[in-house]
Amino acid sequence: MGAQPSSPKPDTTIQVIGAGLPRTGTASFSLALNILLDAPVYHGGTQATLGPPSHIQAWIDLLSRWPPHSPSDTRTIQTHLQNRLDGYAAVTDSPCNGLIPELLTLFPNAMVICTTRDPDAWVKSMATVSNAATLWFLRFVLFWLPGMRHFPAYIDVLRKQWIVLYGQPEPATREHWDRHMAYLKRTVPEDRLVFFDVKDGWEPLCKVLGRDVPGVEFPRINDGKAIEELTMKFIVKGLVRWGAVLLTAGVGVASVVYART
Image (cartoon, rainbow, N blue to C red):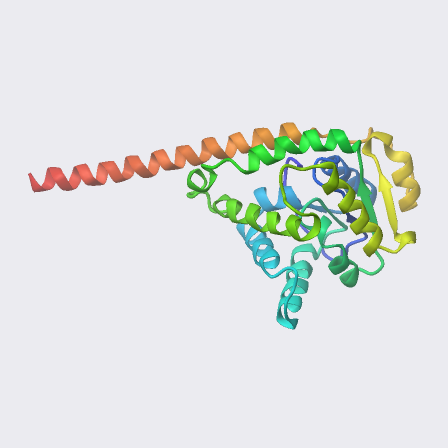
C-alpha cells in the first residue's frame, strides 16, 4: 500500500495492468512504474482507503455487479473502470488484479505484469492483511469517517470477488495462489503476460517496458507494516470522532435537563 493516493494526469492511459495479488510487492511495483512511466499509477488499496470517498463507493458498486448478469451490468462495470482509471498509466493491486479480461477489453494494448513471490511466504503474509481488514468492530468504529465508513462493505465485495475466482476468501492458501496463476494464463495471451519479482530490481522490468534503468534505487515499501499502521490510524481517528459525537450528545442532553430544571 502506498503512502499517498495519486492524482490523474490528463491525456494518460493505461499502459500496464498489474495482475499481482496483494502482498506481492504491489506498492513497490506501483512506485517503480510511476518512476519509469513518469505518470500516476492507480494502486487499488491506497486509492480505495486514502482517496476520495467516490473511489471506494465506485468499486463497491462495480463489484456488486460483477460478474455481470446483464448488458446493463457490463456497461456499468466498463463505465466505472473508465472513470476510475482515466488519467493513469498503470493500475495495480485489488480489485483490478481480478478484473483482467474487463481491463484488456478497455486497454487492449496494455502489458499485463504479475508481481510474484514465494507462494508459501505469501500465504503467511496474507494473514496480516486478513486480520487487519476483518476486525469485527470496524463497521462501528469507522462510521463517522466519510470514506472509510464504506470500508467494511468494500471488504465484503472483495470477498465475493475472491469466492468467484478462487473459492473461499480466507484464510489464504496455496490453492488461492495457484488458481490466480491459472486464471491469468487462461485469460491473458502468452505474449502479453509477464511475471516479475520486485526482489529482482530494475533490470527485468525495464527490459519488459523498453526503458532505461533509472539512476535511483528500486523502491522498497513494506506493505504489511503500512497496512498495520494505516489500520491503527483509522481506528484511533474513528474512536476520536465517536468521542466527539458522544461528548456533544452528552452536552446537549445535559443542557436540556438543566433548562427543564
